[in-house]
Amino acid sequence: MQINNLLHVDDLKPQIERLFEYSGQKILAIENTWIPEKGTPVFTVAGTYTTRGWTEWTQGFQFGSAILQFDATGDEQFLEIGRRNTIEKMAPHVTHIGVHDHGFNNVSTYGNLRRLMREGVIPHNDNEMHFYELALKASAAVQASRWTQIKDGTGYIASFNGPHSLFSDTIRSLRVLALGHTLGAVLMGEGDVAIRLLERLLQHSQTTATYNVYYGEGRDAYDLRGRVVHESIFNTNDGNYRCPSTQQGYSPFTTWTRGLAWIITGYAEQLEFFDTLSEDDLEPYGGYGLATAHIRKAAEATADFYIENTAQDGIPYWDTGAPGLAELGDYLAVPADPFNDLEPVDSSAAAIAAQGLIRLGNYLRKHGETQAGDSYYQAGLTVAKTLFAEPYLSTSETHQGLLLHSVYHRPNGWDYVPEGRKIPCGEASMWGDYHARELAVLLWREIVGKPYLTFF
Image 1: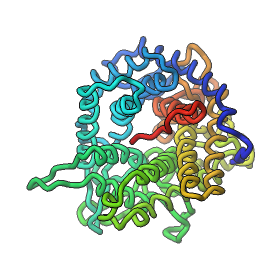
Image 2 (image 1 turned 180 degrees about the vertical axis):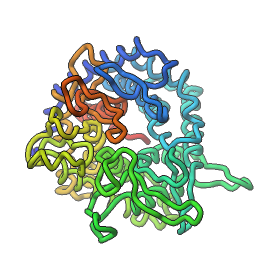
Image 3 (image 1 turned 90 degrees about the vertical axis):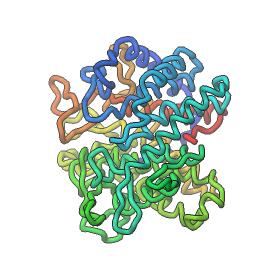
């Protein structure tokens, strides 16, 4: 991609204001028409949100979007939508033992509401705060309990696929373990053994960095620095690593770009979180430098890979090895084309990654590495500027999605292909819409001088 080093965050103000105008309309359109008994809205088909049974991992994004809309605009009808639906519908996600997505569902709802109360944006209420914090502590412990031990005695949070499966997506669910740790929660095991959530967070983080991220160190024939595999497979009988795999990417030896984006942002926000921990917190893990070394290495490698393997305007195609890319010519040297007939782009990957690039840039600048920090930060702004305008910003009153040209599961053929087209395009996803809003709130707060947006 071509980084715009002249872009300033204030330049995005009109785009962000416009985004939230359309965002509010779309949240209300879903709220007024969605039938909860159908399940959770996942992605759009011909402009209307529909469900897709796999896991209910997008409900937190649905109600979290309303909370973010309130955060940005102060319009209390959206706070009411987010708070009421969190109370009425999110409880099953707190104690869900079968998934890896507690950070998606519960931090986007209970976590955002707690954050706004701590900031004084919504009035403090002791009972309400205790409710949010109890939900987050329980969610953190339940997520940490979904554990597979590997050969070296450490382990990982298993994906919903089963105990053999380590997903890259889960790196962003570590947010809930981080919150649980700061709230003093632990996971109680057999014999009343207290299992530290920070320890599980670090072990999962290290395992992911070791097996799901590549560093150009000769691990296999396709070892490119910053490449990410969606899934790693382990033998649960002896704890040995077996092979790379993928569910939503083209192959285990190419990079599914949304998985790449989860890694970039998940690690970047963990670096920010670890800056808040005390020496006593980190002493059992070798101190700050040792605890964070793998996080920074993974974050920088994957951010560089994104920049090097994304189209000129910062929008990636759905997988870096998708076979049709070879027929698109020098596709990295020009803006991405969401209307081509060969391979879809994935705007949701861009929305997620942009936030990670900005956070990594801010982290490095805070630590005195201004040149590298500025480069990542400007890359994030470049992506945001592209996303917050047509053809990615949805401006149609008849389309319920906010961020167009998102892709869910290309190998399974789940994504809608419009009549007359050969590949998916023009549709939105609940995670893409949420992360577009979260990215916009992050930047909006910087523009207007509000506190920096974090999950913790």
